[in-house]
Image (tube, rainbow, N blue to C red):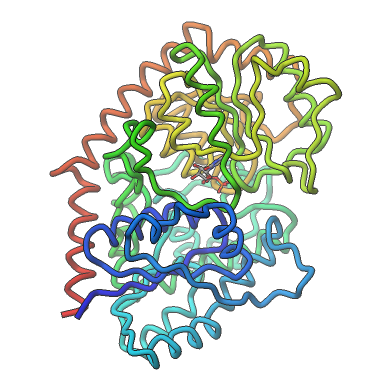
Length: 470
Ligand code: UDP
């Protein structure tokens, strides 16, 4: 029988992208994949990637959709409460989908679902199918949940996960963090509690999973992995799940496959072709960060004053509402020097030789992508795991500088932005992190090459998936 995996992501870009890269890897190795998105995301993917979906390129990946549990006018982009509800309630529509597939004679041999999709665990058990949990962030964030669960059982951590913002929190093998930097301390108390309960239920439920796939590298987080292994086993670091074998040659061969929720502006690659090597600062804050209009304007003024060549992703909804607007005259004044796009093919941008640095929010995918391409980071974390990631980028790995004063969440003025991007792109300190980033790329290339830890783990996993169909 042909192995057939059902893949179910959390409905956000930072989760869909790495799971799709895993799908591509499985499909390239003889596994048939059904990839399930919500109807809202499915439509966006079809519209944004017409003609270059994995199936258009001959891979056995079928994209299907299921309805979400939200009302018509609910916010499906930035409301963490809604997104969490969607993944928690994916069970029923998934069962209907699987019934239809089975009536059509299709047999799923393995479910790979986001750790938060706890209902898939029950479905898998009921139908006698093995379930694998997928965790797109790093092992450190995973370990925060593990240690909190353990501490709650010992009565030494608040049951609702809510900690005081100014209290220093210490988890084994991790730097101490002030409460506000703990990964689930997002938004108001109700939101933070919802994220904590969804994450901790997912982590606790994953103890039953056959594997817990982590998009990270064993060598980067060995101490953290060792500290949780006795209680929360089956962890398999397989990252970075990126098509590093075709990058950067993909720039010329167009072999790269991604699916995006936004249409990508490919013309920015031509603009990069006309820039000097390592001269461009790439600026992007990922798919969910929101800036106030005032903060967006300060960034624009700071970037303009820096005098640097810049490729800047300004998502249409960067200020939380459709139509993010830049200061008057900005685009006319800076048009040959600052290229503004609403979404770009980030992997191709980071692998372009013109890019010399990345001003990033420190999302885990963006961090792994920059590490893999040897691009240093000027990090400006906004929420969730980004604060912990920033600690690694700056203090542990030395591949970046921090934009804000001491990592605070405060408003950042244009003068600070101007001086920090200049320092990052043009000073000795910038050179030091650039050299370190290049070294780090070599380390990453080793782990994904034949015989490397992530390569070995991924190969064992593919063999295991195929074995489930025997
Ligand atoms: N990304 C992209 N084009 C852009 C900006 C981002 O393709 O213009 C991709 C990026 O390559 C990464 C993902 O969006 O894979 C963002 O994920 P990350 O974990 O860095 O941040 P999040 O969006 O979850 O905050």
